[in-house]
Amino acid sequence: MTEKKHHVIAIDGPSASGKSTVSKKLAQVMGYLYVDSGALYRGMTWKMLQENVDIHDTEVVIAKMDEIQWDFFIKDGSVWFSIDGTDPGQEIRGEAVRENVAIIATIPEVRAFIGEQLRNMRHFGNIVMEGRDIGSVVFRDSPYKFYIDADPQERARRRCKDIVQLEGQSNVEEVFNSLKRRDEIDSSRKTAPLQIVDGARVLDTTGMTIDEVVERIASALTQDGLSCEA
Ligand code: DC
Image (spheres, rainbow, N blue to C red):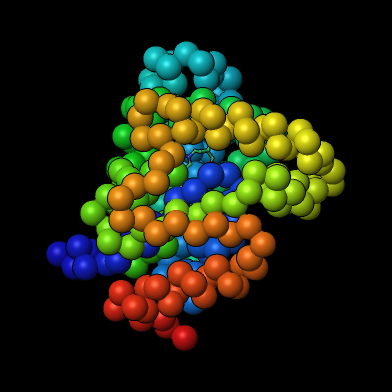
């Protein structure tokens, strides 16, 4: 099988650290596919909310999870998915999903299921995958691990800008508090908490432009022996 030879670049870090934009751009520069692992947690949450599942009732969530049909495909340079035949699109970025996804992501069975889907994506080709546990759990054996962080106030400002674009308005303080809540859940959960693993290269992106961050990672990867497409 050839899929073992496909490279996986793991980019982990907290919400709004800039890792999505950086990962997408890095994937373009490298000629790799981009995978947003958080989108699967969001997709799962979206489906549960659609089905009126009480997300705090773990047993019901797990039972529902077993009934859902996921399909994965390549769309615009990313590995994307549909759930029961529907592409959830931007709905996974809305407030309902945003406020509930961290709860869904604490369920070990959900993590095991999503982890398996993410590992299967290696069949599609070389990938840049962003998330919270990509270097620590999902692709622990990958030698290409990065941990991206930024000052919490800057992260709140960045996320606020995204929400304004999507929903027309936002409030930095509310976003800051919401990010803080989510960081706490993500870092303190028992299964696969957000952490910096051995071998991960840490980048504080506060005050850096996206291009500077991408350049830093791409040049580190070039030194590792990986080549960019461009
Ligand atoms: O990156 P994001 O904000 O779209 O992530 C949404 C949620 O999913 C967030 O609460 C963390 C969780 N998540 C996770 O636990 N593990 C991942 N690999 C990716 C996201």
